[in-house]
Length: 481
Image (cartoon, rainbow, N blue to C red; front, side, top):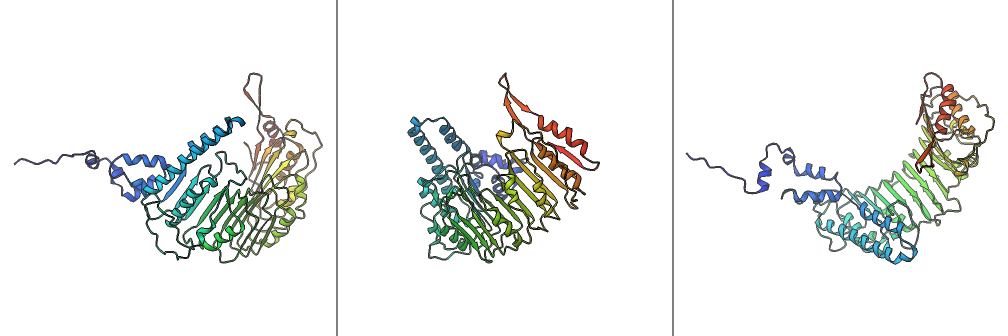
């Protein structure tokens, strides 16, 4: 009898018959998960593999619209343009931004998944694109997005201040319809999708170079019942930020780089675990920071433009603080913190300080001594340029004997071999009872040589080796990076 043999009639059939093609044996869900790790443009290319792969990439639940090439073009054009070529630069930016907007709209129209876990916009955009950005936000909300990020900064990450910043649309919370408990499916970007007053699935909202005013902050907190992470960076409209209420799910808050209009931040009766606040270089007066009844707060990062006198008093109201990072303009500012309140549960302390002269850094040991259970201490020394070419030879001071029973790791970054740097390292060598590791990260400077190459200055490294190695006892690991 003649056997009938069925031959594959297409490439797709041949593809499916391949016995060693393990990738094709995987389920669509697994393949979509794999595609989620690829950049969006690379994932879209897989649609050409076969009919099965044609729409798999459209089912991604994590969508990050990152166009580094387009952003880079804008940055390079800005650097090379002169004042007389400003109109040319403006036209170029408009064209690149339109390309980005069209790309995002095209992808959204092809998206097939009924839900989105993460939606990210990352491009140099301003309020001229407010219509498109508004629709993108509403699209993400309609898919019950869990993490929404708008990063509208320039390619270099700088935040510019001005009237052209995009303003977060508070009116998306003013709808009268109720929210659905299920995640609906929308496949076309035709009309605004958000018809809910509460955004019930949003857990993280990151806004960079997006203007949020006081009323907008209030609406975000009151209408996002499961919001755990809120980051506002570079807002020009935030003046008096207030976060209060034990009913908030908020655990991580970041407010930084906002304009000089920001006057105060008040956080009371909240379940926040991590707080990160930093000011802007244009801020002339210190920002008032008030923290009250934050029983769960464990991590605080405070940098630039905050009143240290107010900060010093509020530490007493934070019984569970475990990580603290402070940024100071000078060693004199550290004196303002004294007497430093005792923080019995603090495990990690980070100090960032600008050094303008070869002064003693032993003032920071008072902060360490106020933390009896400290495990790790790090100080980052920012040496001013005027100090890099001159060293003052003053006599080394005798360090005090105040043993630390729990300190295990000390890191000194920006070590330049000054007397104050040596004193601080010696203090920890002599007082670290259980100190296991001392990390020294010397300041690396490079200057052009006669032949045009860069010559690296190794003096700080040699100084650390010459002066610290003989003082290091057996059992203590000295690491010079």
